[in-house]
Length: 557
Ligand code: FBP
Figure 1 (tube, rainbow, N blue to C red):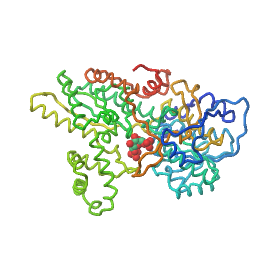
Figure 2: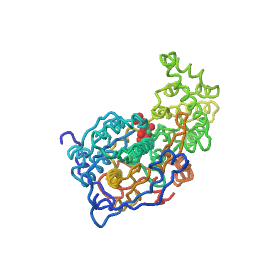
Figure 3: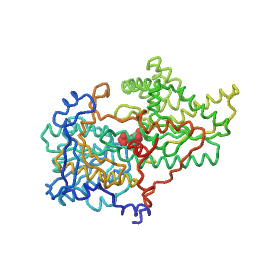
Figure 4: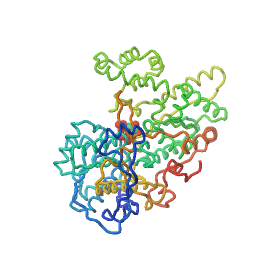
């Protein structure tokens, strides 16, 4: 135990709570089917693409009056995409259910993400292995990766690896894209009579894998609480020193759920929401005007300090930048094979880009500071998109506000001081010790994933609902992955994908910000949530997010 911190030692002893339907044992379950389901849109296209797995009913598990026998099963598990607190507990829950069903069952972990199943790199779990990771953050138990599991060859190699290990079910723990791939793999296995089931688990700190059936993805709770702690600490520092404006970019990729939740927990002076920027077609200069106005008005009140929260994906939602980035993404794929471009210096690359973009997009690109231009040229993600976590939007905003304030100063309209600090919170929250909520939710998702396997289901997402109630009252079951799908353009082609949930501007969560933001801008209503609490009264240890509470109408707007 010498390598373990005191908190690690205590957390290893934590016993995650299960919904009471599952707590009675994996061999004491009965499954209740709902009616046949439809995809959220494009039903004809999706049903044609998923001939074997489309239209299945949702299922809910209840305690059975009599116990059942489970047949022998080997299962493989994959962690896919970005880290999210609680991933280890999904695997622990899956392992415990699988061993409870039959102690001869085996659980294999594929190493390094989806590439592990393709390349046959795996470990076999045992009690000692799993016990060392219970209730810990991180994905280091088997590692993760962003390889997309989608081609015929990849499916074929996965089949061979599964056959070799006698694996009859695969659990993919991932976000919307990974679960889209889980649906494709499930369909392929059925179409090829492989006898291998595929079950997904909803993971991502971004909180954008949610819908009528999935209340939230795991990791959102812990990550947002971690960012809220840090923002609260900075608010207190700003309010003590009264000399800095802090611009804080918050991870979350496209959707602004994480920034919105962290803002509701801390009440900063400014919170930008990408979805609102897009809906109101706010240009970069109108965003700068909005921020500058608050900076000037606060300065007039003697406050040359403040806190601005900026969602990671903002840049892609500002209309003129969105169009320029789309144009840039298109030309980048061809430019990469151009040796003048790929061997060029940053300055040479920028000049080639400026001459290749359409004239309107080229002038938008030219108007950006050189730091941002270089960041826009960095490698694309596996989907061909800009890696928004690498674009320092917070610095872009600071430099443009500075410029605007300097002009106002010349015109005698501003006499304050604008000293700034920039921050980016993302990686700080992705591997935190899971909150009690995430520890319980993840363990339940994993345990429930095995229940879905035991009932012979495939192409389902593990679903645990009623999450604002105590864990014992949570409802466990499964949702067909195809139910969450629609058709979207990817790399110039229409593809079936799980629909990403963006912030709903007419929903109660955004409304809370909208109603309060003028008050929060001028009066310092900072909230200091402090560190996540693991022990102590349930009112601080077991609280869910403001987002969940508002969506379930448990809190006031
Ligand atoms: P997932 O969608 O795979 O869960 O990843 C989430 C995320 O943390 C985003 O918020 C962020 O933009 C991205 O990962 C960063 O990716 P990387 O870890 O590759 O830098």
